[in-house]
Length: 558
Image (cartoon, rainbow, N blue to C red):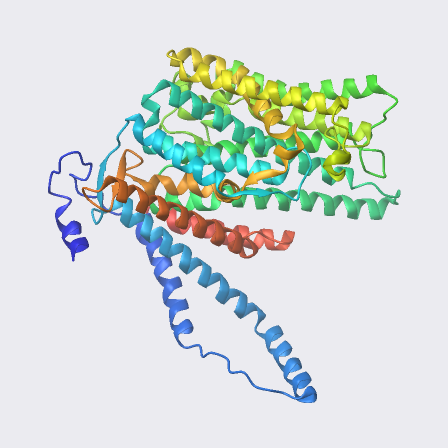
């Protein structure tokens, strides 16, 4: 009953310290069409779900069981397409319910909204509570390699928790909070570059084999191209699916979720650059594999210099020539994605948010690619990891305590802690936002490498991680997207208020909702991948046509 009264009254009442004193915007034709499709999916799924009967347990002897199994296999073969379609509709129904919940929270007056409180008490208290919660779930990792999967998951998790907290308390009004988040976003992009570069290195390092004739080589080349295309589609799907759905549901521009186009662009740039690097500079003749000769160090240095030029030259060209940057991103066909203003000219390029976001981290991904290639090159030349696995496989009492590596590891850890603390102090004392933004692209790599040394140099530190932060790292992209409409409201200018006059209870409730909804969105995104991402070039044409027709249906003005 209270929700009904809220829906009727919140749009006309003027509450103290609230942002819900205006009626909600009318739905657009795109939103009407999207909700129509969601309703069709739910109406298709619910009757079939209600009509299903639970299977009864029947005892078969050996002969009758084999006959029953053959019948079941035939039915599964005949009904495979229908079963897959049924699962697809079921997943779309669940995703549609999530989108409707987003719309109700942020675009209607059913729930109250309130202003953000920029006081630092909330930021400090939540960071302290989440830090304690993360420390309670310390686990031992099965991975021992440098910057392993558990370490990167944990790293992304606690950074994303801090970023959403920063948005919750309107941290951009505080210079130190703004600059700290800039470093965290740079670290996230660096980790993205590190992970994808490692994938390309493993892929091409394992591609060696015997030389083949022309026909087999052409077939293998086509297969390799398709694998690259499919991987690109999978990653772009993972990054953009929910953001695109939110754009249609909330009638929002794509650049509102600026981090999604940012990582999408840099992944595209990385994919093109790494493909050219491995095919032109690193391919070992017709046999494939990596062309690395330990005896020719000068040749390796030249290749690394060419790779650095290949990575940095286009970035510097775009940064130094705003006219070229504007022509690429703010004219058709990319104008609808990156531009905010309806009409663009060269003088307005500096006012576009995309130029500012891109410029802040223009070197971060390049630094990540160069660092990863140099690290993998050293590992390939030495024949073992730079951080030896021998120490990980040796019992602690038998390990030499005074070895050179132990001294080096302790020294790197000490250096990493010192630089990280110094960076935190400098950020906390920063008062000139303009100067911080100007220096950020050039110095952001320093605290990233310092934290990496601190976290990876010593084996006991490298093999421990927080399971809670690692779980948050798995859903980090969803946390970023969900926060705008379930944690906050009114395009992130306000806060959702479910429990009036009890701010702590309200904070705990919407925080739990944020985590649960993010986990659900992540689960649905993973499950929908096999239905949306094509498995063959033919499927690419068919599914691409379907998606294009769906886009025309939703965006057409008629």
